[in-house]
Every structure is written in C-alpha cells, then in structure tokens.
Image (cartoon, rainbow, N blue to C red; front, side, top):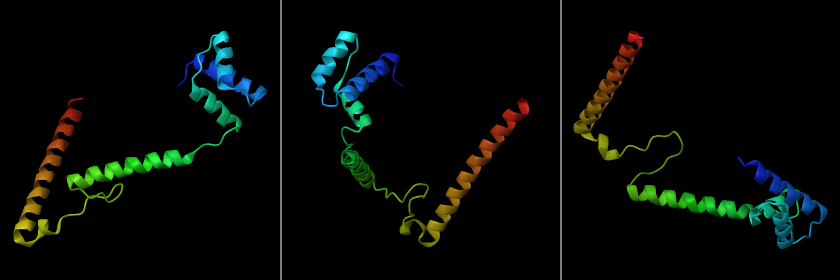
Length: 131
C-alpha cells in the first residue's frame, strides 16, 4: 500500500495533468518539489495512463511472461521432469512398472506411504485426546 505522502504526490500530478495534458515532466517535478512532494517518472506515467493520455503496452507484460515461462520450462526439462499441468501428477515411466519387479516395487512404495499416513493419524489422535 502507498503511504499518504505518495497518494498526495500522485493526486498533485493527476491534477496538474488534468489542467494541462501536455505539461512536461520536468515542470511537474519542479512544481511538486516546491510543494514538498517527491515525484518519480513512473508516477507521472501512471497518472497519464489513468487519464487516458497514453495507452498501456500489454506486449511488454506478455513478453516478460513468455520469457519467464520459457526459463521455467528449460529448468524443469534440465531436471528431467515433464510438466503436465496444474494438479496433474507427472507421467510414470514405462520401465518403472515393467515386470514383477516393478509391481513389487510399487506395492512396497504404497505400503510405505500407508505406514507414514497411519503414523501421522496416530500422532493427531494422541494430540487431540490430550486436549
């Protein structure tokens, strides 16, 4: 959240741009300094955008998002993990469950998970029964 000084400075810039939409940043900054406000160029730009004097550039946001997604995809590809989408588990490797050894290994994993969950439930029950 912006503090009150920031809100006052923005209101000052907004009112200056309402009076004269073609006023230069340097003029606004000088008048703001005289009034005791500290103005940054981004404040000037946001006020112009709010008044509709300039258009937002959505291409910059899209380009940054695409770059971030590509970086994340490269990172997961390097780790050998293929992303399938939100909430979906990774694909099981075909060789992981091939033959009897794979099935036995899978069953042992399920039993291990069951034991962990049972231990957690027992801990929760003991905590709840003491209260």
